[in-house]
Image (tube, helix red, strand yellow):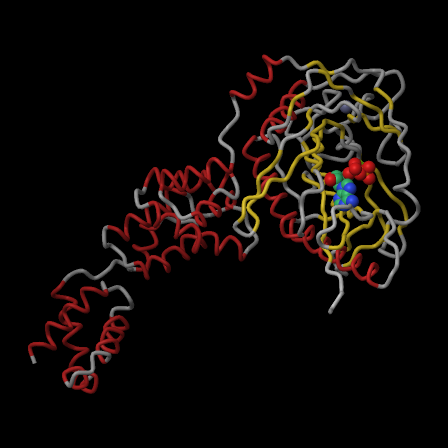
Length: 484
Ligand code: ADP
Ligand code: MG
Ligand code: ZN
């Protein structure tokens, strides 16, 4: 009997998201991205002595919105805590976070993993401040000096921690996408991993399949895309299984993902063996949240991705697949619905967005918000197909030009003379000419070879540069061929 063990992975995520408040969490400095280094700082966020933090109410509201979205239970009383550590991007030498009494505990996010709905339990959601940013000058091998930009210091973050409920790297990526979509629907964060306003640390361990005990975990940091989270986890799981199979122990440590090499590397030093000496933040009173305020926020929550997906199926009659693709981001779902307000054939709208528009955007790595084609223009194109002004085939040519130039479909059709030939007389002349020039297929067809018609249709299409209505060509050809 083969007694080789199979292993299963266990994954838990810690996600940080920058909140879209206008000002920082404990001072009035702007959170605007991309300003001159250190231009958005003050004595509070620079950690100068003698200053006091004042909590930003909007940040609390955004954290409550997020917690409600994951069905967490909001604490009426939560406490800020000092997390003490030294790092050059942290001028106070401590980060104000929440520890023993977080803003929210419990809840879940439902993900769709391989067609199966799966609940990932949430452990907590809390508020904290971001640190600054180090910029290292010099070469990869030799950092000559480092610069620090404190603009990000004190920008509000929510931290969301899951229970170790995920089992595959794919499910972890799926969870992150769902959570990001939720943040975007809520309007509380941009949720852009590439830009670093959504960050994820992945905790992962492996254990013999069927075992209920958790294995020793490692934590992987530094992934800046969903794809990289998935790749880093795949690598790390394989690495751990290899160690176990060769009888070596797994060391609980933090690894950094190196996307270029496609490997994870243990962080130098014992930086993770921290004792943060948490204690309640003496400069802030405990956070008291009234049930009335929570109710008010709950009443203002938008439709969530899962609900919108369901509505797309029920109200528009879209297949589950279309609904899932179209609600992947709020902006895309909005784009789709704007089109449907202008064009009633919902499935046609969905097909064009999914196969054409998303095809072009994905090839260029662009988001729907960067689409050169507006919903009104796409709906306009579909209307022209429906009215028979252009064929579906020509519409693809028109669409490409719309995408390249941003011009309206009417303008492109005009410029390129693409209007469908629906004039029977004009088309009849072309058909007669094609019949005269193709005696071979003509006699084949008359001899009973149905297939020969395809060649004749093709010839008419070429002669009209694709501008003729295929049905009409068919009718005219058959009519003439029958005449004998
Ligand atoms: P730490 O104290 O090291 O930060 P926590 O218990 O706070 O660990 O958990 C941090 C994250 O790691 C959570 O998302 C949790 O679900 C996950 N986690 C905890 N134990 C394991 C494990 N053995 N394997 C995988 N993930 C784990
Ligand atoms: Mg932790
Ligand atoms: Zn400040």
